[in-house]
Image (cartoon, rainbow, N blue to C red; front, side, top):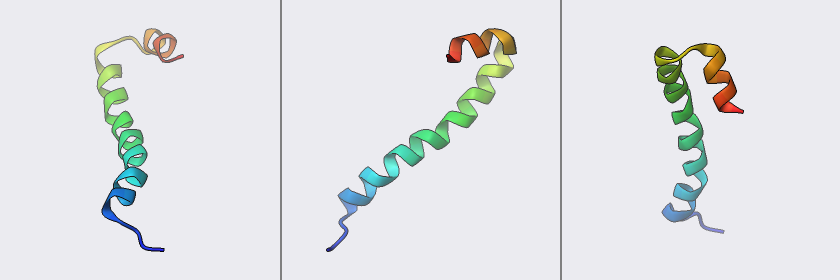
Length: 42
């Protein structure tokens, strides 16, 4: 079975989206109250 670039891109897309969440959360916490931010997340 041969892996193609499309297959690798599809496999790494969730990893990139998941990894981008941490800086977004950090920026969001900078501009808001942590308690309010916790209610918005759930």
